[in-house]
Amino acid sequence: MTLYFITGNKGKLAEVQAVLPDVEALDIDLPEIQTSDFLKSLSLNF
Image (tube, rainbow, N blue to C red):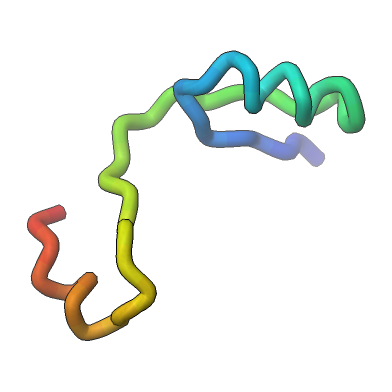
C-alpha cells in the first residue's frame, strides 16, 4: 500500500519522510480552506 502526502512544501515533506520513509509526494494545486465555518467554505470557487 502506498501512502501519498499532498504538498508543495518540501520542508513538510522532509518532516513526514523522516518519520515515514516510504511516503510518496504528490504536488497537486488545491485550494486551502482558511476558515472553520463550513457554510462559508462552500462559497469558495473550486
